[in-house]
Amino acid sequence: MANFNTHLMGAAAISGLAATVLVMGSAVPHQAAIGYFVLGVVGGLLPDIDLPTSVPVRIAFATLAVVAGFLVVFTFGNRYSLIELIVLWLGCFLLIRYGLFTLLDRFTVHRGLVHTVPMAIGLGLATTALAFHVFNASVIHSWLCGTFLAMGFVVHLLLDEFYSVDLFGKKLLKSSFGTALSLGSLGQPIGTAALYLAVAGLFFLCPSPKPFAEFVMDRDTYRGVTQRLVPRDTWFPGFLRRITPSGLSDS
Ligand SMILES: [Zn+2]
Image (cartoon, rainbow, N blue to C red):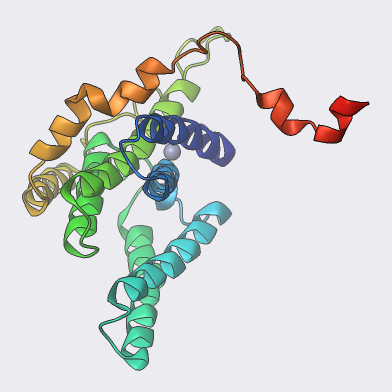
């Protein structure tokens, strides 16, 4: 299994690259790209939330609880009174920090249902639905949020899978091989069925994926990257001139 730092770096590298591609193509505004990046990193840390004893998980949960509370407050900020907002914020915090956390603690076995591909898809769809219905995001923006979260999640599963393969040892495959990138849990048939049902249900809660699919397929989305993949004549043109103080060139 890959450790916390590997997961953090892996998810940050992939999400950063994907967000950069979107920014280069001027397909999305910068602020949105930063949001996607954060969602990708969060996705990369999520699969191990079923290890409630680990410190990073506790920190991540507390942070998630605070951030989610603020997001709710910002969204409803101009609609409710201060008292109502504080109640909302507290409710959100308690629900995530204690409700969700306890629920996970009690009902999950590590590498159980949380650590699966359908869970990645389900959480991605939940993010999309949440962005669309609660935060009034556009269809494409909502789907991008969900896609980045699911992508980070899958990167985590892949990293765990790679780390279970010992390329240099005599024993090529460790016993944990194949358990990371699983499609369900044979030991939990009812839970697995419920998970697939939930994924299907969540899909119907999401806005139509058609505009998003067109956005992804559209060549214009990547135009900035294909045009600027490698430097045209010199590397970093004008960069040296820009970073050296003008007084130096006189002497
Ligand atoms: Zn893991």
